[in-house]
Image: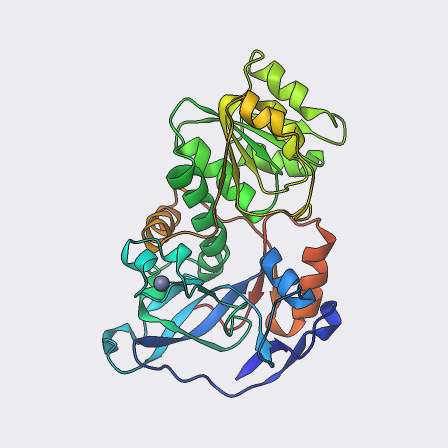
Length: 346
Ligand code: ZN
């Protein structure tokens, strides 16, 4: 099969495009012929590497994908063959205490497509049967691939972990990334009022288009917490979605007493300083999570398929141009998801 893979860490130039053996589905697994893969910042981090990351080379990148089931392993219903599906990249073992409790994103043997096992930048990928979910006829597979990781992550963080309620104020720090564009839509759908902090007017226009009530341009308003307090009559927001990390000091100031700070990542870097007095003094809760359990994934994907939520696709590159796609994502000017086209639409 054709694949984009690594044999060493580094910049986009380490991505190689060539032939690798077709994977074969084992017991309980399905093989999917991929039509689209979607990029995540995770792909860039895996490509660059980090201390402790041990890949088996050649390593195929890519967490997100959608396509058509083309083969099944022993014990899997053959009726899957020919069905259009989206992949849940977050793979639990199905046997540990967390998996049995329906918390497979906390699995003791947790795996992630494109990080701990072969990913979606390829003609084929093999996953457990429970990690595929049907895509309705007529729904664009590029949209399905682009939605999977970011929507499950945003849904689990805001709804399941964050307990967002109608009428609450939500601040989203960052306007254009995949999780943030998903968070804006989910928060609006849940009946919240949404403020977005973005780095420029173009990104804020997208946020407004997705339903955000207020936008703050941090290039014009670097002390943006003051504007958040003004918009909320001095009270602050109930929930802050902060996946930048280094912005926590301002997020703490923008939160109301008893506010919840939600985080699923740290695009600004993993290590930063915070002033603990804000946490206890304002009764703040910091709620972290990664990905989602299967139930949240299926719930949010069905809302995407029904048209209530939409993945924002910025640009589609052919699989063979994965290096250019990585360079484009790394440049940070995209509005929404960057997608790889692998095969013709099914
Ligand atoms: Zn498990």
